[in-house]
Image 1 (cartoon, protein in one colour):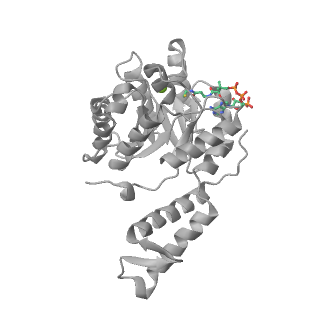
Image 2 (cartoon, helix red, strand yellow):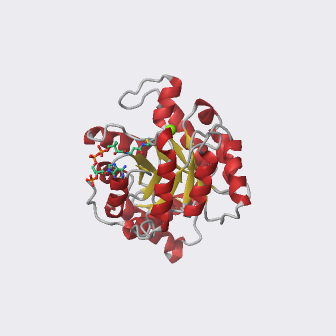
Image 3 (cartoon, protein in one colour):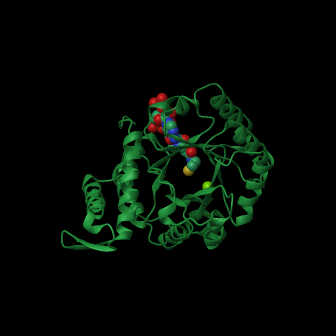
Length: 309
Ligand code: COA
Ligand code: MG
């Protein structure tokens, strides 16, 4: 089985909101939000003393119908504590029982960290549709990103997506948190490249200053230019900026449609390269155009209005 950039499933992950699992007001607010995905957090945003209560709150949210009534298309992900921590095994069992779309594993250093979760899920006969996401947020995780991503190529692998954990990476390395992320960017690009090499989605880290809209907008634009699929977020007020930055501009969609239409003309059907509006267009551009058109369709289906505040 091989997965490459063009064979990855198309799924909008423009805005991925963390939500501490024990925050009942935030859970109440969720149905009105237009993020593409939500990560219910049992890890860093929950203190050790509150872990059991957060896990129970999550179990209840998923069993009493509230999770099922979230907007169609809002992807549900649960971030567990590492299996090596005192809470990891219990979190994994609870997450498995909740039947989310994916489980997010924190602080992944090496492929074995994912294999351990994968094996544990297989032992409970978890369906193949239950996917795994990995946080790359430690120095070893960044150094091993290629090997970790390579797991996505093994048969039956559940790995779908990388998230860059920029706060942990800054903490672990001592790198300065500067606007424009000059010293962090080489590592972020390494993570993007590893993800792309093996057909994974990859999401940018969070922007902590949730009242600074201009700063967030700039960082979203940087992340989009760096090749990320979307941004992880900490506050509902950040959703609209991420949806804009990682969405599809009308002019981009029009260009993609023009490419698809040009290759569909009878004269061009057997041609590898054509000329369109004075520019060379190859079949690889057709593949990119088709993905973009598909993504635009899914975004349109997902659109719930930007009422996030
Ligand atoms: N998801 C959903 N709703 C959220 C939310 C989130 N992540 N963060 C805040 N809200 C809700 C609040 O509950 C509040 O709802 P209300 O109007 O019904 O009271 C509303 O949005 C406004 O929140 P606000 O008062 O501006 O923020 P706050 O002071 O309550 O919380 C944070 C600020 C940063 C503590 C909070 O946003 C948060 O916990 N974010 C996630 C942190 C996290 O998960 N970190 C780990 C990954 S890095
Ligand atoms: Mg972290």
